Amino acid sequence: MKSFGKHLQRIGAGVVLTGLTFSLGAGIASAQWYNGPPPPPPRYESHPMRNGYAWEGGHWYRAGGRWVWAPGRYVGVMPGRHWIAGHWRMGPQGRYWVAGHWG
Picture 1 (cartoon, rainbow, N blue to C red):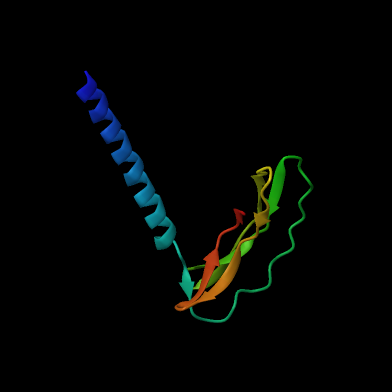
Picture 2 (spheres, rainbow, N blue to C red):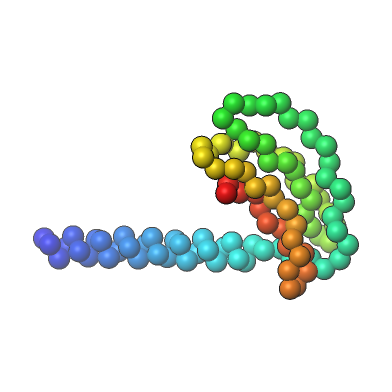
């Protein structure tokens, strides 16, 4: 019975490691590189305060060779952390979008 338990532990560890590998790879693969003029100025979005939530402002992204607006949304607050807004950054291959996240 001990060997069966160890076998299940190995399978579980393999599933976790596989999931981590795919999630890390997805983050890298989803980087959107763009070489061209900067995005248009952000749109104004009215958003009332909501307890327990932070506002993630909308942003521009590239789709089909043009700029498309992604509207803002509320994200649940993480106590003891601060929100780092999403932004475009320059890199070796051009501009790329850094998604908003808790820091």
